[in-house]
Length: 133
Image 1 (cartoon, rainbow, N blue to C red):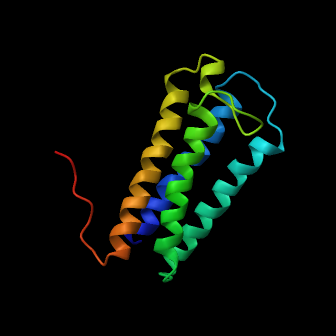
Image 2 (tube, rainbow, N blue to C red):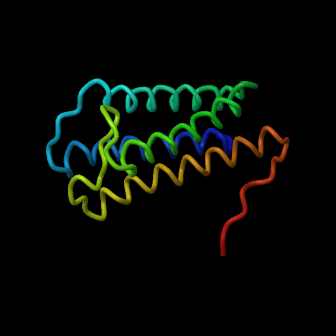
């Protein structure tokens, strides 16, 4: 499995964790179609980007950049920004625990990593992302 596929898979797993957190760890809230649709779309496009990366499609990297950046923006607008409309589920409206916060931060970090890996691939840089030591 190449680095772009691994980064997409990591994001997909963390999106599933975030969804499970909503279902099992957070206070019950009503999620209408306006909030459910972005989550479903996130899963679908990340899975498509993963499939493209596994097939080594020429479009895998640009699609992965779009997935990464839109995931970061989506989490920030939906969960971190104050309430602003039907697409909003701000964590400031309740008292999330550390697990909930981690399952917002981790997908955002994974999306940033995905974006970095995809941009490096677009630039023709095949070296792995350096580990912080």
